[in-house]
Length: 144
Image (cartoon, rainbow, N blue to C red):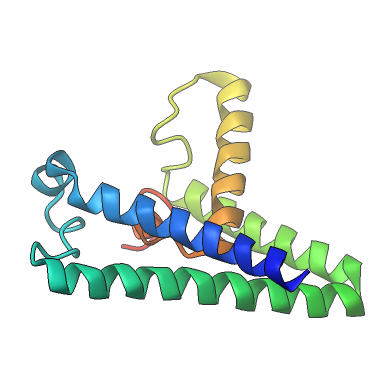
């Protein structure tokens, strides 16, 4: 069981790291949004340090979030579901208040609202567990 858990953590952390690294090294991203992209340096030796830091950050976040959720679930599954629901609801209210709830999915009407809410909720929960660095953008999970 421990090997399976370790494999899952390594896979999720590697995926999060690869997404962050690839998006940051993309030439279009760097020229289009230079204040956001460009944290991975061009020098190979320092790139390795950044990639290792991204990997450790993601793996640590995943392990601690899963451990915390497990402890809460053992105590009260209702409390765990309530916590995740309240966190997600607060995030959705925040996105509505900033008026960027549907920023990349311009589908009119109730279908757009439902789809945007579902996608935003799924992305938030994934990032809560993996700490994917690219989701720190103000249009994604928040910030100013």
